[in-house]
Image 1 (cartoon, rainbow, N blue to C red):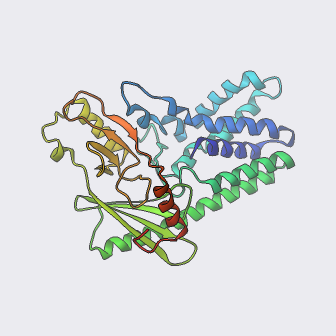
Image 2: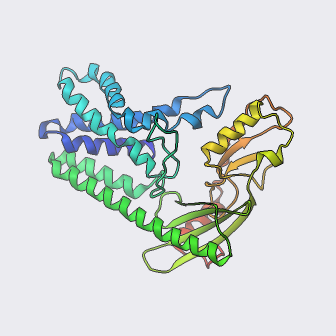
Image 3: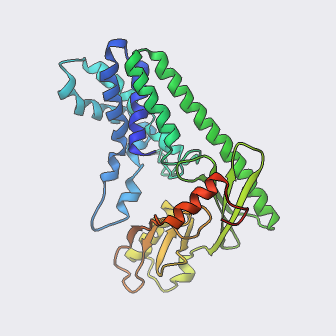
Length: 338
């Protein structure tokens, strides 16, 4: 989730274990601890552009790191709060605030190393967008009401609503997956890789990407509250294969290694951007849910094999793209046309 929502969630968790007279301090501590896990975002190198994406949602989001992260938050906050509250209570609120950071991030589609150091697999449940205003507003309302009434049931109720919202996201995911699987079957395809994920800030419009016979098929699927679903058939793009595209590239070269690192980060959903030369993209993400143009990727220079690939974002905030996206979310488009 975005860092603000992480903080709000941490604040609500801290309120749930705080006494009446501790609500304000607990909220502050929980918010700070909830945001601390995302400090790994600042791990980066000017020499190695891929270092940041490798370490974001890494060890600081691991389940094993929770008590350590809470301890770090406690140490950082203790100089400001030790005259007002005992260190044991500060740690309790830090532990509550930090505890769900990794799990909440794993509910999105980006991927979180929840099981580090035992596994480097990036866990992604794909049930909520990285930014979801409804979820964030539930938490904000919970915090404000909790500060006003200073009773634990407010936090319990707000957290229960959050769980219900995530359960609704799970239901929507299963509905979208069923539509995507049926669509692949009608095409006579047997996908070898498949991902269905929510689009930005909603649980209505979903992006489906699957691999069949060396190509990625990308579609948008709208599942509202009714039983009927809308399908916006999208683009098809060839899967990237290092051995065939760069047959002469030295496996020991920096570029070859970077391509492998990016492919691992992208769960091997990698293809060339159809609109830009030498841009290798993470095909799971795009500004439009049925587009093959990636939201981010690496710019590679085959003529410079010892040079690191450059990681870039390709955001298109044009009016046309925004309008098409909103039309899909609101169901204003005819199937396959928008």
